[in-house]
Length: 364
Image (cartoon, rainbow, N blue to C red; front, side):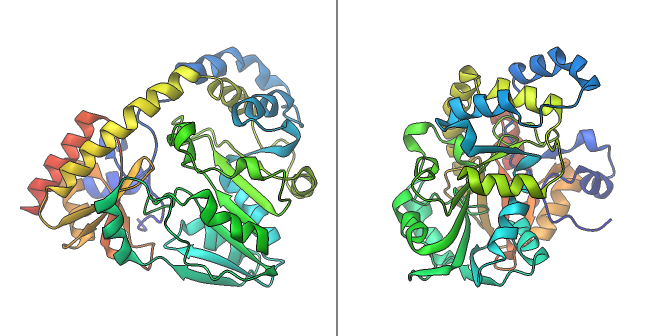
């Protein structure tokens, strides 16, 4: 089987490990181990009868729920079949500009979407050596500067995720706003922002009404552990969202996904559980990895950690699968990282300890 370019490919991992996919402990996909929440499952069960009717094409109830959760007028919200679908339409608009800056290493779908529409991509690499100072300083880095040239240019765009994948760096609002003020279009993918409690977030959602060239993408699948439902949303000016709506297929969000999403964004108990769990679990995983010879984890603000390795990650990954049925995310699809880095999701304490023990045995 072809080596995957995304995390979560359990069929490939199971073939390599020689076991059923259900036996793999997956650290490669950055999905919360706490979900799906009961509110999502209850909503799906309650709406099974809706399968005989088409979804509301305007998704009024869902947009109302998202608006309440994000403190945004529902007219400024567009639900999508995962944030990946909405990324496609953002890339369409960015491709009309002279060029688009992309901070690298970057989620592979950014380049895929941009190049699909013939966009000119200008890569701006992070200084990976600075990551060591970040990891030694704090778990978040809102003062970290973007490696993108700043000059008044309405014909250029910027596509960025915050917190950044795969490094976990958290860029501050004030580091991004100058680009919003000077570039023709800025798209900020905040797929992992909800893992931070509101008082720690660096979201730009509240700036959308001031800047019609700003688009925020949000995912509901990672925080709520619902990747199979495919649900995300875009927050932007209604005129821009209206153009996107005209381009895409009708009913992109199925009825069960819409019902589950409307329920989970109102589930404040699950939110609190996640915000209480993650900092402790992430710190313990960071410390466990840092204590292993040849590994240097990078502190981050999301529910995953990037780890630099003095050994071949491909060999570590293969050994973990064959000996322990544990899957980590190699970084071969990130040209800037290659075989020197891997990424792991933060999971439950028992699972994190199992990973650390497996890595210790493989490294020895």
